[in-house]
Length: 64
Image (cartoon, rainbow, N blue to C red; front, side, top):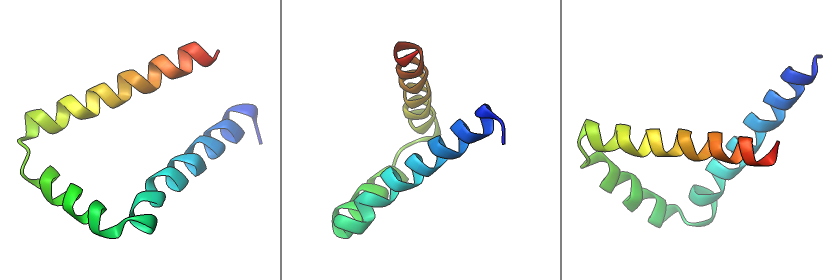
């Protein structure tokens, strides 16, 4: 495998671990959080998605 595919696999694995921790450890809180997210408008969700992408890019830039 190439270095890129190795890094991508590791990154995706970490995402799955981090995303799975909240419903594993706090299922009730996670359910309430998702219920509140369903009430947001599309524009609000896009804004949060954009902020997450920008934060991720900033972290990658900083780590390099």
